[in-house]
Structures are given as C-alpha cells and as structure tokens.
Image (cartoon, rainbow, N blue to C red; front, side, top):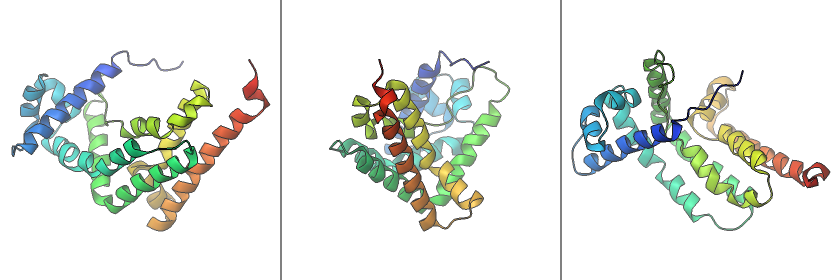
Length: 213
C-alpha cells in the first residue's frame, strides 16, 4: 500500500523555515540563539522547535553554515536565462557540486545532523518534521522551468526528482565512499548523469507516444 502524503507537510515546512529565519535574524544582530530563543522569536513552541532542531548545534549548522554556503547557487538559479535546458542543468550541477565538494567536512556534518534529527523523532509516528530545507527541489523547479512547456506534469516531476540525485552532499558521499572516486572524477560523473537523465526525459516525450491524446 502506497504511503499517504502528510496533509500537514506544507505547514511543517513553513514552521521549519520560520525557525531558521528567526535564528538568522538573531545571528545577524550579534546574538547566537538557542533553540528555545529561536522558537520564541518564530512564535512556535519550544517542543516544536526541538523536533526540528534537537540540539543548538543542529540549528547553528543550518543557519550559519549550510544556508549561507549555498547562496551562490540561489543567485545562479535566479539569474538563469534562455531556454536551453541542458545548459541550465549543467551550470546548476557544476555550481552546487563545486560548493559541496569544496566544503566536504561541513556537508558531511550536515548529513550527520539530519540523520540524528530523524532518529530523535523516530518514535513520533506522523509527526516527523522536514529534516531539510528542500533547496534542491526548489532550485530544480527554476532550472527546469523551460521544460514545463514540453514535458507532461508527471514526467517533469519525475525528472526533477531524478536530477536531485545528481547534486548535493548525499551524491558526493556515494561517489567518494561507495564508488571510491576522487573529487574530479566524481563531479564529472554527476554532470554526465544529469545530462543523461535530462536527455532521456526529453527524448521520451518527443517520441510518438508523447503525441497521443
């Protein structure tokens, strides 16, 4: 039986974002916030905040580490022009993976924190908060925007999800720890994989079957 989608997923994502935003404001004003202080500033309960960020380190890593590190990717996605989806995807993959591999220790620590958060909430069925901000899917939505005109919605969403596998810390760990590639070869493989997935999706929808109905 397929798992049911959490009807409160959007609200949970907004709650997490509110905590991070509140903590960011405090940090910019010179205050290193505790989880409880960030919760108060975000107007959510302490118990709720601790489900998203079980320790101060988890909150600080997200606010002072991961989020600002990926600012160049955010800027890149906003600046993308033109309808060449292949070029857009290639620039995106090169940018995000370049940052990820260059800051490997911090990104591995982030993965550790995300997993610890999952374990901390494992016993609370139905209440698990979003472990991560979901940047990849949001960025890929912008990167793949030109393809929305040619791909059916289902195929477009499948491509978006597939390309998420080619970027970020998770992909870096697989390339280095499982495949035992060095940084250069690992990044090349991920760029190649992204293009193969993209071209496969575009080719599939350009065939005879895609013109039915």
